[in-house]
Length: 477
Ligand code: NAP
Ligand code: MG
Image (cartoon, rainbow, N blue to C red; front, side, top):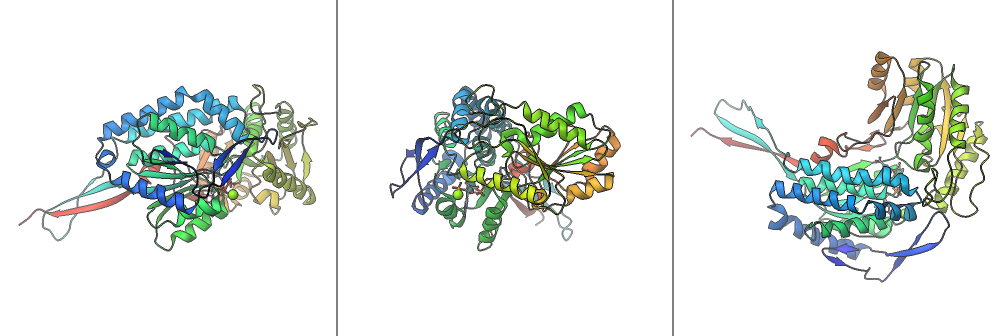
């Protein structure tokens, strides 16, 4: 773990095994921190927050520092992608394409914000006397960041880059199953010149290290990405002292294919929107809503795409579908495939042989999943697509919105008017039109309904790490 500039073990001496999901082998171990380490890290983060070195750093110098971090990550891209692939299972070449560039870009993007966080002057009417009123945007303080295992490096980078741009300091707890790239990132950030204490990493399990972080009295804000149940738990526990909370949670995002869609594009996109990262993406297109006139062709087309996706370990250069992250997730996903069939859906998947070892799951379509079914409503978090048909635009919108989640939606439609009307009507934090998976540092990202509270990255994402203060001065005597 990293506390200040000290790389340390847990006081208890406890460690957690790190497993390669492609073969089940234990290849590393990490320290299992708890309340003592969280407390030490929060103290160091508070001291760094108040230090002149950090608090008075010139915005332009903070900007340069974040750019240095971006350059460091870029220089170590290959190593980080490989590490992510061993730890999480994902194909290394895809981590090189998605996870690592996302981390680089958010530091580069947020470097620009360091010099652009400012308030406004306010035309107060008051009682007729003359006032000078303005707002200040001030860093919130010590941030407790908690991230999941599906995009470990990029999710950590999103939170750290935004918080540091705003002038906060961070204690981050990665997922117990994927802590390695976060630890390496922290090492690279120290090398890049980030002052010790500004970023601290405490590894350990959610119930101990995570719980200690969300309840620590000296943490000003919790920035969380993970499951909806844990997000709700964090919100409840924040009620005691009203600490600031932002939540990026689960989803059940629809891919909607309208009758006029370009199917040569919509079919491969719909397939990759659910099968990429073995379906372990919060905004995965896990529900297919397809117009009845093209439904059979689309289902056959998606299965054909799936048939051509090589399944294997993440270190093979041609693998497109790696293992899921662990045994527990594989069992969960398999149980959902059974549930879907019991509920009356037809399970369609390629004939492919799965590798003998490791936690692999075949890309699967559950065709004919009804809107009442569990597989249509619950987040499966695997390469499983719940597919259903609709007959009118109104029905497509109704089905899209018939979810307690509202993270994303992919809409395939040639008619520009229909597309924009539907985009406005869909309850989701992001709507992609004739594209999918475009997640960008400049585009605020987050969820409606039970998919979360707040927006990460973009202008909204950096301001989420600030408090707004109104200052009002009387100018008359
Ligand atoms: P999770 O179980 O909620 O875990 C997320 C993080 O919270 C992990 O670091 C976990 O630690 C920690 N945690 C667990 N219990 C805690 C507690 N009581 N107090 C504090 N922290 C605690 O979710 P996951 O299974 O890792 O990730 C999958 C979920 O994340 C999916 O639902 C997915 O949709 C969602 N997700 C959302 C977004 C988004 O931006 N909206 C992005 C990615 C993922 P341990 O790992 O040690 O248990
Ligand atoms: Mg856990």
